[in-house]
Image 1: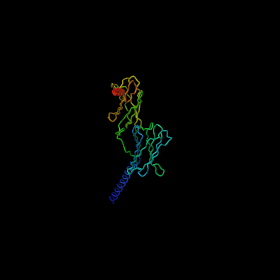
Image 2: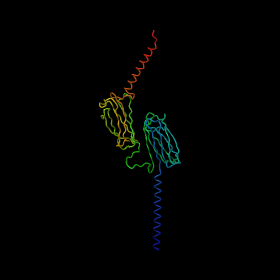
Image 3: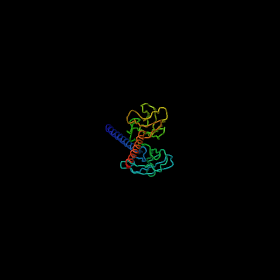
Image 4: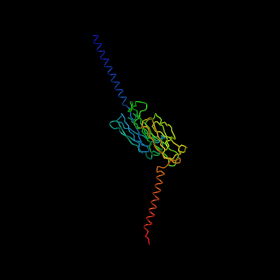
Length: 286
């Protein structure tokens, strides 16, 4: 009799543990499938911003509002329906309503019977009607889609830099983008003869962008030729990028170049000379 009672108790205990385990597993699985994520991408100097995302609530439309940097204007409103797998995509064309320079907030929202389910915001910088290089992601997933195994894992995007300068100016603006925001970017400027004229570090912003300015009127910029600006993070080749700027007499030289201008001038003079000779040969002799 006692043996039968003991066996019954063991069976009930096992059943209870099984139910608890199944409930815990179901709750854990449910927790890992809640949320929405969005990513805003734009190429440098592009007039188009692409927003992609994924949501668990596949039957609810996603509404978008793009808000100006001052927060006073809604420049675009859009609405999309998620696909069967929960993914969605839309594109924003930068137009006349994008008058302000600065960071525009793209807000994505899902609501059910006037109750908000998910709301996510990403920012894209727009200057003079053109987007800056952007790849910004926000997620509300309980268990994120991408979970790095370390504090700073790359997403295979790497690092890139650009040099912007006005012809005849003594100022060069260096801007760039990286997907490793926890590591400073080391900038090195090398003169045409191989000497280093400037070394410094800059901390990327949260969106991965960084920028700085070099003044070419200093004594180290006296050599004429192409100066190389190199940006580097870590020892990975993907995180080493460089660009060149031609300097002459301490100012930026037009891309056309002095030698090319001289060749053009010689060509024009030659054409004029040949034309003059041709005209003389056409004149009949008496």
